[in-house]
Length: 514
Image 1 (tube, helix red, strand yellow):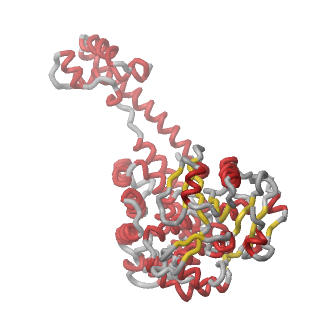
Image 2: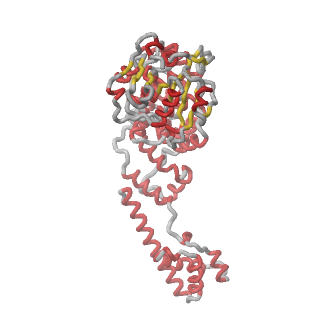
Image 3: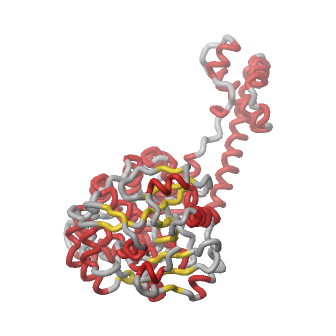
């Protein structure tokens, strides 16, 4: 194997610190070691490279593993028969058989260099490179331009990090900096401007000043990027702990107007006496709370967009300003925003519902079960928990200190109650039509009384809810005097009412309501 200093013509910067070679927490998986060793045995160079090296050095589990080598794609395929190669970027994906997603596939890419990017998205031409140095020089940020060397025959031991662009220093200082000239990097792929914000958000780093200025100067290039690629970066950002900070950073760098320009309409728009923040701050605070609570993507998106239509519905100024029907306008805008970003129809429908119904009215003494039942029908039982989380985020975003007041807890109790099947004769394994056929009876009060009497038996012992058993008992009840059958039915109704009260009490205790 050729020595690194001969490849580069100088002594490369190699990190030999404990943080790079000592990693007591992090271990390179055997599948990765095996790929490296197989390439080395075939007399090729092979290095772990990119984001997985960054994550490894941060003691974080890499979401995937990438390897770079001087072997050509056809040579890689000969070494690893279980593979697929379907792209033009010299990357062969090796199938390891591991069931873990991050280890099931390992990407091996031949050293490459890239020519001009005419469309600000893809290189006009991808060429083989002879040296690792050339491959690292084409990468986006210093923290992603490091390679890890596992010497021959010692894969997993004496790990050395090859760091030509002070990536380790930027990791330590929590800095996002491009490799080389930032304008050149962003000219190659304009999405890198958004990736800079995403890394700053997910890693809680700062963007270096020259890199930041280059984004401010060239952000218009982002308009050339496909909405699908923008959406993927946006989703990663929105799922970060500091999602709200990511949105604000995009606004500061003039990137937000290429993603959700409607959010900018809210900036500086004052609200009424019920809010202490302006419209934009309110949405940011709502998202911030949702992220803090580790909510799912639907709740986070709805928290960010639930009041986005307020500026378009605002009437008046000061404490008495109104925003009638803003939830309807916000739902329509959310539909347009998410479709523009190419979210799936399922995702769009769910978030739009959360936005549309987040203003549901509820008062313990005024709203009954029928109103709650209609809301559950409109939103969907499967979405009610998320809707409540959006409502809570909305409250916190309004400056209210208490996330879940008594009214909201009582509402949750009622939602669970109406979402459950009520205790009724409908639960029986036999119905009125069955009885009329079995007993040769016409429709009338007697059929209902027999059903109630049968239900009393099942309340005492649920195991008796068996169609054959109930048919037998129904025939017995049919022969009883009318007065006695009526008494049995009334007694069953009373028992049913008591049983329902007990079940309601259990749900009430769950939500600490009376």
